[in-house]
Length: 69
Picture (cartoon, rainbow, N blue to C red):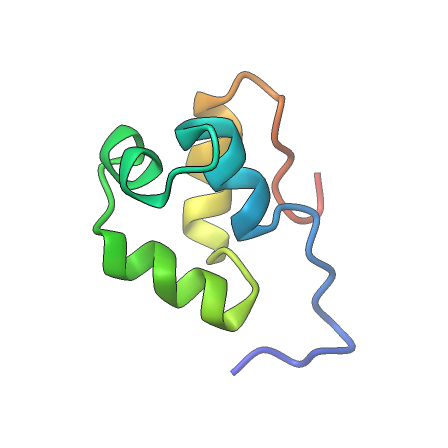
């Protein structure tokens, strides 16, 4: 579990879904090659895992920033 005080969410699941799926979770999951359940879990936790943030930041060309960048 991540310490809430130590974690600042620069990239939120809602931003990722909006960017990749135009608001559609299914489309975002398809574009990112993650399962829909993974994205639902991100939404439930209100955070994107660090490894996914790094990958998404690189693929988005800097439009979405990873935590700490």
